[in-house]
Image 1 (tube, one colour):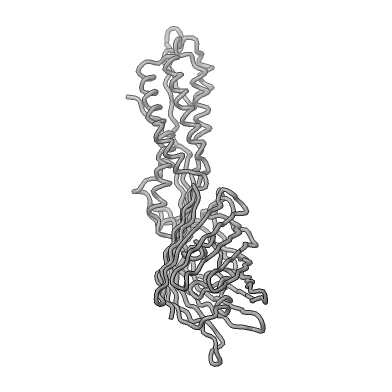
Image 2 (cartoon, rainbow, N blue to C red; image 1 turned 90 degrees about the vertical axis):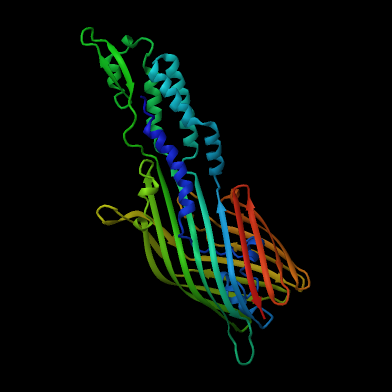
Length: 455
């Protein structure tokens, strides 16, 4: 009975596991812009006075808020899925073509009756499969999730010169990428099959076939010395792999803001608990039974700091500048051998570095416009992903304080494919706020919901 090529099985299995791990990993961390108002306004928020989410963008804008009020926000839920290379579309096309099944069938047919005709079918099917899998090499998928809640006070009078917002969040960013490394074998296999004369095996010499020893075996007639049989030799250890990283975060912080002269200034000290999952497996090793999340997870606890400043100009505009995560941290991945229990570094790490954001906004009684610019590009969660540096624009129409209509657009200055449009609504009866935001393009989708009470 013929055996399918292990390398092909491995490449196919990697595709399934890339999708599966994105679903089962719970280690996720919050990202700014996943609250519904900001998401609907293209991700802008640095200069927008909003006591509900100031701690996530710029603590200084708490002192720009004109109303004196308490705010309780719970829950704040956001998610963003990004598939910049259209990996799922390519996987769907791959499955529809049945390339793996076609190759298995052609190999079975060849082994029953070796010939030039049946070998040409193997070559054609293997070439198609190799091309399809090469097309997804390096393709990545990213998933962001956020769950948060906050309580704050935006009053400022003779007895209290400070405004504050305390918050807790949990969530994270995960990314998976396929590393297809069996292409070299398949290319050599194609060349080897093409060099063998299957219609007349006597035309093949032992010296010729010895040069193809990585791809086939043969027998020699003990009397005539002629080649009498050739069998294809599948690879013993496929090299294709799945790489998956996830940076999970639980964070507690307090944004504090006051006025100094004509400026609003703010600071957000925060404590974070980081869980870095760094998983990599060859195509043959990637299986549900062999996956134990604890073997690939490293935990860290850190302190960090955000700073912000804002100024209301005479022409009605507000300028804001904020620096987040002023203390840089490097989180290195580790893996534990499930047999020996030995923990060793993976050689991979994710850096959390300072980011600086500039914002400009104008808020009137019935409308708000805002523009944000990331002054420093940030690296993606995986090296295969493009960087992130956003220019965000948004507008909000306020319907007499009872409802809001929002729209926006976010440009990624490092990768125009990841530009997204956004929209959202808010409902605000009697101090209750329900906000919903959506954002996306053909390969990215974001959704956020928030319930708040302001009085």
